[in-house]
Picture (tube, rainbow, N blue to C red):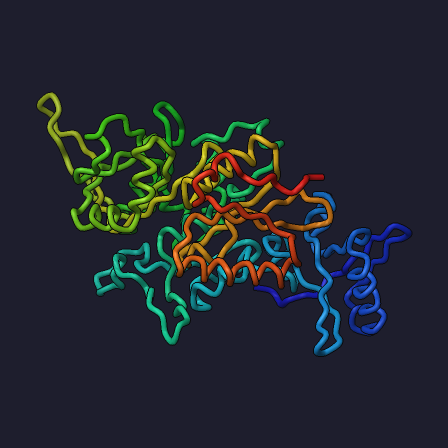
Amino acid sequence: MSDIKTYPVCFTGQVKTVECDAAFQKDQAETFKHYIRFARQNKATTLITCQCMKDGEGENRRRLKACYSSTHDNYWLARWSYSGSEHAPDCRFYSVWADEKQGEIYTSDVVKAVSSGHFRIKLPTGLQKKEATECDATAQPTGTRAEGKRKRQPAMRLLGLLHFMWEQAEINHWHPNFDKRTRDNAWAAWRLKQVAEKISIGKTLLRSVLVIMARPGTQEIRNNWATIDAAAASNKRLVMITSLKSCKTEEEGCLNGTLPLAEAAGFPSLDVPADLISRLNRSFSRELGDWRRGQKVMLIAETDPPVKKFRQRDGKPVPYNTCTVIDAALMTVSPRFIPLDSSWEGIIEEKLWQEKRQFIKPLRYDGEADVFPDFLLKDVPGREIVPLEVFGMNTPDYLERKAVKLEHYREEYGEGNWWSWDAHKADALSNIPAFPVKG
């Protein structure tokens, strides 16, 4: 990856616009700090933007915030949360992670930006099948705590990979204008394929082993077949992404040694070990409950390299591909493909959609869900983002974590600049607080 650069910064106020290039920021440091101080004191009327990518996307892209330290009496600029990927990969404000807390989940070598917009990710089990013993994909990569602090994980699990793809494709973003286009499985597959072109697992391009949801009679079936044949020839594992098939009866709600997949045309026949079914029932019980209640649930799975076998049909041997699933993960999504971590979140996401709000759903990857806001509003005047929190319990441990989170919001956003709903109360559904007024 190229060296980090300092790009021009633009201050846009009511009276004039000033652009400070890299030389100015270095040689006229005190004047530059004066501009930052002025912008901080006039937040409502001054816009700060990084000029690393002048692509005409509008003033809300690559916005910067003016920061101040009273301890050192110093001013500086920083990117807003969930804007790091908007910057050029060689910009000093660029970040692989939407929120820096996501980066704290993993060791530094798990996700690497290797070139402009391209990433290398480490999974517990690589995609190239080798004879040597590999890391067990079913083992939790350091989910323990040391001296009260969670250890960084040495690999990204499948749920983390799915979240990374969702975030890079911005499927976790919603804007009222999105209602003008159809968000269905075909749309999601197209977005995910684009992202897979930019991700390598070790030396293997993810797109070359990705089998994606497909309907009968589409080109995607032939693409899936070609992917499977190439993986078999090169002894590579597959990554599959689709949704679970709608569950209509109690019997269909039991996995029964298989994975009921929707829009899986062109997929190989799957051998699903009993221990994997047990792990899914144990680790994704909420998602499976959502599925049985009729919600959409996405599945990502990794398989061993496909093997060609033959079955008799009309007295003739017919070839087919089969794979053994070695790991899988589930993710509940709304009808708009926004990930949901609880039924309460589903209620709020639906309300946000009905009220035509612009928002982001932060993703936890392989971290702890209570570290991140449930949603972030993007359409409140004078605020870059406004956190939305759904508090679903009132146990002592939960209330302790709630107090810590609220204190963080007071420090980060200022008193009153967030929204919350105590969903555990008896009359909660009839007393959802109004969202902050949109612009």
